[in-house]
Length: 104
Length: 206
Image 1: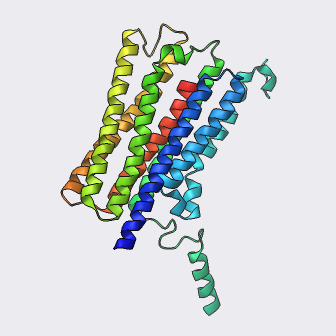
Image 2: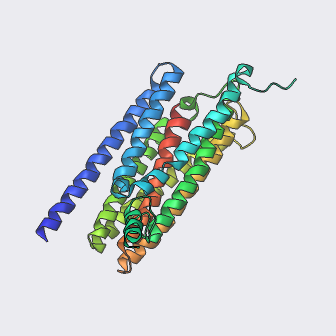
């Protein structure tokens, strides 16, 4: 029983540490939002902090690190599909140079 | 015959072999994951549509001038904290400690309610300033439209989460809960937090 109690203490400590790291990453993202840097660099760095945050939440809070690899991989499906959707739609906004088919 | 049976068993034991429980979770947890994945697709579509509309707009209002960033940061803080407390509620429920689980669940619900209160305040303030789905005083109509649709959908998810957590908390207080039930509600709550991480970074900060 005492051993089990000790185990729970460790778990709560891990959650508290995770909470602290998430706050640090949030502060970092907030700093990036105000930083006078190139918009593209800012977007890239914000994507990085966001990915770091969701990986921490998924692995520790959502216990994904204890799941089987096939469940872990299907949870990444939306992210992969989002990247595909993004790469299909975004070139449209960059001007006519990227259009493969020109209507004339 | 024997070798094919052994082969079949080897395949079933592998991560990709299927078998009785291919994902190694309870059915309810697996269904929650399937729901979260489909819900994530909805939000992915919203955020990419927003990105597309923003990039085809001639200009986009400066968010820091329109939104109260102190309030938004506070809301982010509250949601992340409630997520951490929720993780502890799942830990307490798994350790068969319903009293502690109930306390953590109440704290989580409180976080959700504070978040919803702040959002209601933010929406009221922006609507008073003239923001509508079809037009707004700061620039292109898509700005306020994507704001209302994205934060509205997210806010509704927070509201649903608070409702589910309230049901789980009442059941925990009655001693009628299971570790799985708290964990599934927790998975949903963390997902709501994950969506907010995206909204905070790409709608408010970028």
